Amino acid sequence: MSDLVFDFTDLSKRYGSLEALRAVTLKMGGGAIGLLGPNGAGKSTLLKVMLGLLPFDGEARVLDYDVRSDARSLRQHVGYMPERECWIPGLNAVELCSYAAELSGLPPAEAMQRSHATLEFVGLGDKRYQKVDGYSTGMKQRCKLAQAIVHDPRLLLLDEPTNGLDPEGREEMLALIASLPPRTGCSVVLSSHLLPDVERVCQRAILLHQGAVVFSGTIDELRSGGQKDTIELRVKVDEAAMMAALVKRGLEVELDGGTLLVTGGTPALIFEVARDAGLQVRHLQARKLTLESAFVKAVAGASA
Image (cartoon, rainbow, N blue to C red; front, side):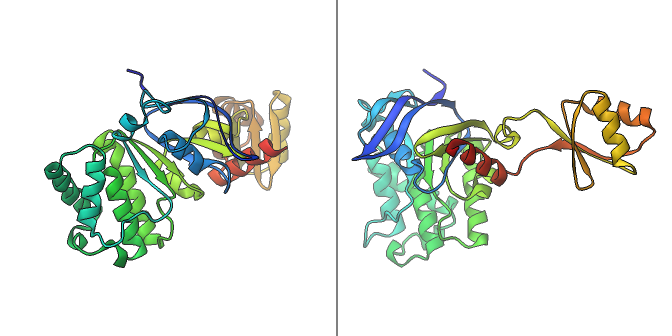
């Protein structure tokens, strides 16, 4: 059995003249993965393709199942929390989660047992017999998460899970999601336009723009912007002298306010240059883009 969570080759999806996904070729293993992109980038379409809910061109395997031919078997092992509201009118939370568990292949008694336990986990234990129609936005989001995880899936697909939540509710939802991989061993794909959500939960990210993958890798790699390692350096006095000494040693140096941005050197070499120049280093650390800056830079580069 493959260790890959998904494996796409030339995956494309059209809605008439609109190309929602463009020749996506991508492999990724387990863990918590952020799916990033501007509105209309193809994130929700990709999740639906992964579930076997949409026809597509190309090849797609998820959890080593062929999405085109084995979608029904695949969905027994995948939990899905859609962006839009998805409850059945008139059902309470226990009934809704139990129904979702049975649809995933669990027998009725086990489905009901799992439903109670899962609703306790998401913080709806005391509200489980209330009709979902009357829930607040935060309670509805928790119920959507519960129906997605009630059957203990190997892969959890989350589409904008913090939509409509206040800051406290958002943090509680992200804490629940972050706890799932170490608690259950499942992998998570978190689709969101909120970069802090991805940064809070995920170690790796996929960036879509106009239906194409413009980045896939770790969050740290995304922040690096594909550039050489840059070091932020501040000295006690005389930045100009330090800059000249570094340039003399063949390093690239840029002055940003009172901070020297040094490319191509190591901390040991920088300390050596400072010592030889008789200057005192006050601050030295690797420079990384914020996730927001890296996101904007990657999208701008793809649009150029």
